[in-house]
Amino acid sequence: MNLAYRDIRHNLGRFLLTCFGLSLLLGVVLSMIGIYRGLVEDALTLVRTPVVDVWVVESGTRGPFAESSRIPGDTREAIARLQGVSAAGSVTYQSVETRHGNEKLRLYVVGYEPGRPGGPDQITTGRPIGRSHYEMVADKRTGLSLGSRIELGRDTFTVVGMTDDQVSSGGDPVIYITLKDSQQLQFELAPPAARREIARGSGPGDTDTINAVIARVSPNVSPESVAEAARRWKHLAAMSQGEQELILTQSVVERARKQIGLFTGLLLIVSAVIIALILYTMTMDKLREIATLKLIGAPDRTIVGLILQQALAMGTIGFGFGAILITSIKDYFPRRVVLQPEDGLALAAAVILVCVLSSALGVRLALKVDPATAIGG
Amino acid sequence: MSNSLSEIPLVHVQNVSKHFGEGETRVDALRDVSLEVHPGEVVALLGPSGSGKTTLLNVIGCITEPSSGWVSLDGEVVYDGHWLRSDLRKLRLEKIGFIFQFHNLLPFLNSTDNVAVVLSLAGFDKDESKRRAIELLEYLEVGHRKDAMPANLSGGEAQRVAIARALANRPRIILADEPTAALDSERAGIVMDLLRKVAVEQEAAILAVTHDEKIFDRFDRIFHLRDGRLDDQNT
Figure 1 (cartoon, rainbow over the protein chains, first blue to last red):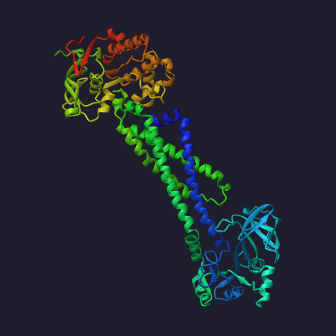
Figure 2 (cartoon, rainbow over the protein chains, first blue to last red):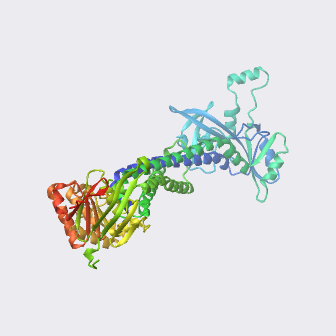
Figure 3 (cartoon, rainbow over the protein chains, first blue to last red):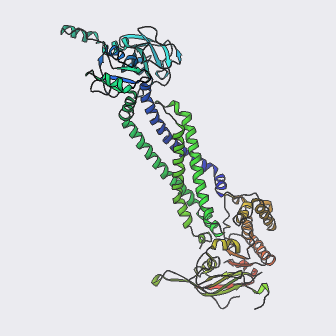
């Protein structure tokens, strides 16, 4: 006879309500892990999208994401001529804020040369950029749709293609425009500033500047050898794809990662304390029944089993509800929440462990109950 | 000594003392208490509050360890200066049935399962436990309430289910703590009739702590406890 199950069935409403409360807590823990995964995923998306092997940036910087990097526009030709490079492309990256209708829109603008590395890897609807000016490919998270027109700088752009899950490490949705357009957007001075520059005799300013050159290398060629060759130009720095990813995960999102990790740890501790208190209270409510069970001859394993099984049932149901809840609403979070099966399993194991440890308090209380209290003496 | 079963006491307590605390805080709950209860007997333990009734019941129920003396249950010496068995819960399960003032039924089990739980603890399989539990409920004329939860039972019904639970594993010693205190005269009489029936038909010894004057005439013998001692004038 399973006493734990019978007791749960007897107080089903209260038990389910407790499980629901716990599920909200565990759902928050799971979402924190998902947000962390999403943060890393988002940070790496931009770096992985062009599918390249080498990043060439301004000397002395770890650009273009961790630090600002400006190099001459003709660097791409120089890199493309290096032995082992199969393709190279110039890219720019910048954040802009504009309006779409009445909505304020923060965007992460990637400028690239169509036909060269740097553009979107997959277009879900529409087409790639076909004209040299004023067309853009936008991520669906911008809220824009095919044919939408928005103003960037002094020009109006039309959305011709859409991508999925392309965001910056800051969570801003990505749009792709041509390199020329992005250079104008990033480096062209506003007319009054340009007039002032001309008046000073220094001209309106050169816009042929890029943030990085990205390159693919031929099979059997080491990216490190290409990077080494690029570093011979003293004004350039070069790094492999792996190094660039490391910079992003260990530098750009490191603080956020620590913050979320700490918060997740705190939530787990809070969960453990709450589970322990719930189990302790549930045991307190059953002291007379436990004393009676001891008096009529129930061994300790029956009493321990009663508490432990209820703890595990509560943890399992709470985790299950929490996982279902977060899976259902994760797409409504403003930032990407990535739920990976291994994270879910790890949290489930942690919850089981927490339940077992937390039930120790209730078990200790139950084992100390004097069977004489059932008699009332 | 005769070999007749009825002459071998089921409960035999000899020179049992129990004190709590030491020095100035020492309280002598039982002083040199000796008594015997034979099969088929229904005896009462009377005394004012604090006289040691519950302590004696706990000693006989192997819940409280005496400070000195000798205790035998169902022919087995269980205490002789110290407990002679380590598995006292198993001993209780095998030899003793308990009946409480407020029935102490497990609120999350129905009548049948409240009885069957004892059999389940004793190792009976599920079907056998259930079958015997229903038999007992019918024996105690509460079979029609076999599916009812304790909260839905009347006081008399709940006490009969509690008696069924006490009898489930066929113990030969039944210890009852104020078994009729929560019942009216009529139901108290019914419960006492049932205890008498059990004592006679199952050759069990029943020892009840009670203050209930309306049932004094239902006992074979009455032991009076005062300040931890049994009065010489036991009736």
